[in-house]
Length: 362
Ligand SMILES: *Cc1c(COP(=O)(O)O)cnc(C)c1O
Image 1 (cartoon, helix red, strand yellow):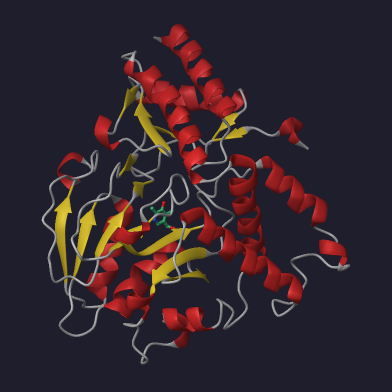
Image 2 (cartoon, helix red, strand yellow):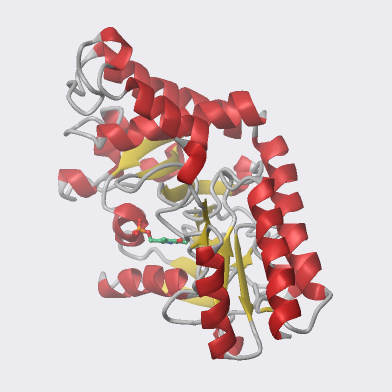
């Protein structure tokens, strides 16, 4: 099966660990001797109960979550969370802080605005096309939450450390770096992550939310837009995206048992990112676009001397078994997404290719 697979540098949906895909393939027609596929069984069956409970238990262990947090699976992607967060947590007289670090933060702010919720954009890196993470931000003391985007998938930046927001809980969109490193959970009131970047296939967003925020959800909201509905019913008020949750369970098992947890994952992620950035720092041919102290471990964005060369580079990389290196259509250039599931060998192959390409064209 692995013979004709490429190194997949897509930003999302993105590469998944090969052992996970193989396990899915192996068990696909007959899940645990049920005589049915995981896509055919009832979400009310004991088989699926075990899947979702194991996914939650592994999330709790990997992140060291206390009982004060709930782990939820919600459809509608991270984009739905942009609206659900202000809708659930901001009542009359409440306000929230937002930091604008790129396309996704901008969209999160847009939803708060559309809903007519009071919010302050306390910092932005728009002045330099979002090439950095703002520092020394003054957060409001009376905000219900401070919203950040921990990793900016399109701009190639990432918060190296999380800001000090005092007693105000951070809510972070971690779609593209969830589970890439250990977290100091006490800073966070909520974390959400569309699965299709770092923990599974598309179709579900994982939400980790603390009980003090859950207590704010107003009863007047439509059931499917209220976090309480999901918290009260173990994410099964209605039919959940069973297959996506099953895949997430297997990815988390791989993270725990094969990789050895988030500390070990971070070490590998740092090694991969360093291979690419160190190489680029030693040549003028490739230029990483993010400021050094804001560089992402997950999405490495870079430019070549001309758009023609970028096009040629992406084309030749594809011919050499390395796909998905085109930058987001809004920014151009190149982007190598090196999520958890990208092996070190994939990054080494990319660096070797880039070296050869430079030699020929530099
Ligand atoms: C991809 C992405 C999103 C959008 O996710 P959807 O699941 O498609 O709604 C939001 N935030 C970040 C940081 C992303 O990378």
